[in-house]
Amino acid sequence: MAGFFVNIFRRNTAMRSLKKKPYIGFIAPGFVIYTALMIIPLGTAVYYSFFKWSGVGPRTFIGFDNYTSLFTDERLSGIFWNALGNNFRFVGAALCIIMPLQLFLAYWIDLKMIGHRFFQTTIFLPYVISSTIIGFITMLVFNPNIGILNTFFRNAGWDHLLSAWFGDPERAFPLLVLVITWQGIAAGMFIFLANLKNISQELIEASLIDGAGRWKRFLFILLPALQPSITNNVILATIWGLTMFDIPFVVGGPQGGINNSIDFMNLFFYRFAFGGSYYGETSMGFGATISVVLFFIVLVAASIQIWLFSRYSRRFR
Image (cartoon, rainbow, N blue to C red; front, side, top):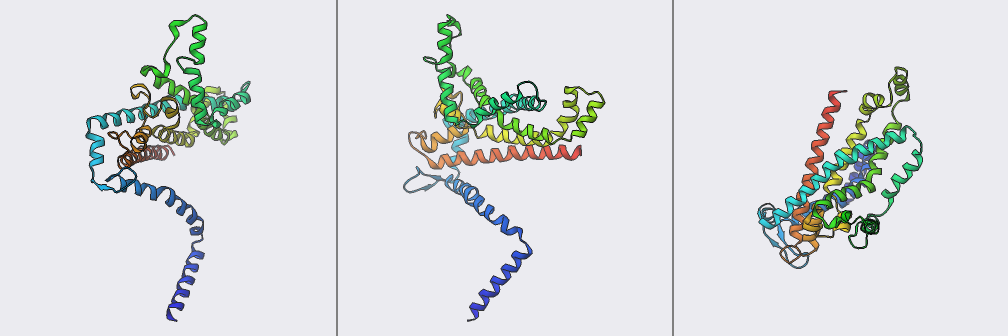
């Protein structure tokens, strides 16, 4: 009987606490979902990384051997550093090529130049198309045997322009950047465009009265006001570049193209976790090790960027 009253008291206490802190009811569902889909899988990956395990059957605890192999094994470490290097090369391309293009196009559309609505639609269209379809279109264009580009050059008599395209290790990565730029440029562009729409019109009108042209207005008024969207796009572009998978997989296959020229960390993970590349066998333990290392690389990179941008915003506030 005493236990019954104790349970009632605890329930009433919990209800009073919930009334005092009503935000708990709003946070709880998201927290539960985030824990189930992010925290638990991450903890599980860290746990499996300490085992030698094919994904079925018994697991053998091996401590930090998977991490040691990843960084010191002659074959595995070479693949790891090549894939990670390609990820950072793509991050560099995203920040130095794709993001300035997104900003330019957003400003161009915001100025309502001739044909801006048509170009806004055509730029956004590839973004909503499946990455598999984008990869298929890419191979239709760049296939060295039956591709549209080589067929055109051959029929025009320009045989000196024929190329293996993605079969050429020197051209594969730049072509991949070109294809992904065409597909993904709309995302950051619309973030910039939304930020431009929220800038005070009084500020813009004052600059016009002072005689500022379009580019001076952009450099000295709009660009500083675009810091929130620049911060978001830099962080998103970095995470995007470090977790690249779909189009390289469709275009170059799980091996990352010729000589691993378009190999990325997620392809590296896929091959070893599911593709039997760990000395002829599937290794979920080693795959988990790759995923844990990649997670912390992304976490550190994003954290540094957030810290730098927060310092910048406080300095000029």
